[in-house]
Amino acid sequence: MTQRRTRLIAALDTRDPAQAETWAAAVSPHADAIKLGLEFAYAAGFDAVERVAAGRDLFLDLKLHDIPNTVGAAIGSLSRIRPAMLTIHAGGGSAMVAAARKACDDSFPEDQKPILLAVTVLTSLDDHGLAEMGIKDGAKAQVLRLAELALRNGADGLVCSAHELAALRAEFGDKPVLVTPGIRPHGAAAGDQKRVMTPTEARTAGADWIVVGRPITGAADPATAAAAIAAELSA
Image (cartoon, rainbow, N blue to C red; front, side, top):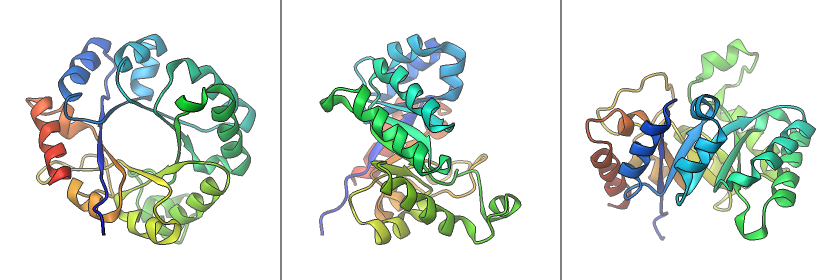
């Protein structure tokens, strides 16, 4: 069996465009993509997103979640940025996911469509947190429910915890693109993440991409930290 190639996304979570540029330059030789999300987009604006992402594959992690028409229109507005990957919340429902799919197909050139990723259950949530919201059968069952809904309505892949990777591969096979945040190298603090794995564990479980933020950007030398994770993935 051929070993899956798992790629690294470096999450550049900051409000400061200069800091994001510095990190991007440092990690780009070692990471396959960079992630910019809500914190950066809200603070610095989308012109800054374009500048930092120029010449790099961008995982634009905005987790869109609204009525279908609004999500579709928002994706149309983002088409000038040409992200490689774009996130929505699977919890927005079938019609919202379908509207996002249509907007990607209508708003982007055929060879520049982003990978449309549906977020299942945030890695900051565990079974207790889900139970507080009325979801009594735990994270795995909820992830599988939302995954089926999202993939049936046109999502290219999913954002999920590493703990659900094996179950998703067993249920849906190799086709969906699986992107996994909440990755912590050995010895790194978990922070606010509840369902975490190491890079090697995530690769073995079936991740196509892993997202690593604070263990890289919080390191004394972000380039060295990113290089170490990349080396672990390719070992």
